[in-house]
Image (tube, rainbow, N blue to C red; front, side, top):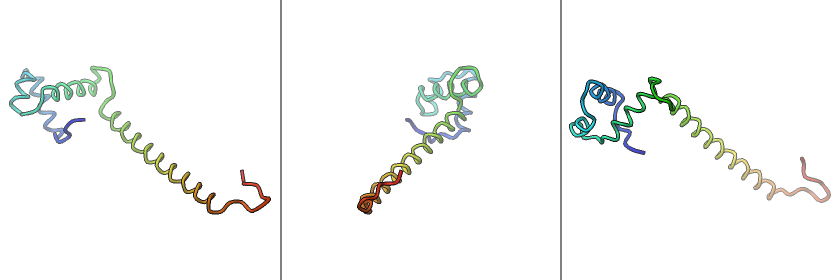
Length: 101
């Protein structure tokens, strides 16, 4: 998904330089980052400021956290289901009794 090593302060400075009139290609060359990265940062900044439609940075962070939690819960559910299967295999119901519902 790309490099995540740039600090928010660095990104802000790049965006400020861009808004001050510096060309994205010039900034990219001078700072040794890709032009596409600068355009992505600019677009996200415009979304965060409400100038373009899309998910804000905060909403994206919430979505990532929610997806991570869903994955954890699905893993726990899978483990629980497997444990139930093992218990049922190890202790089948006694003759004549019916499984509980």
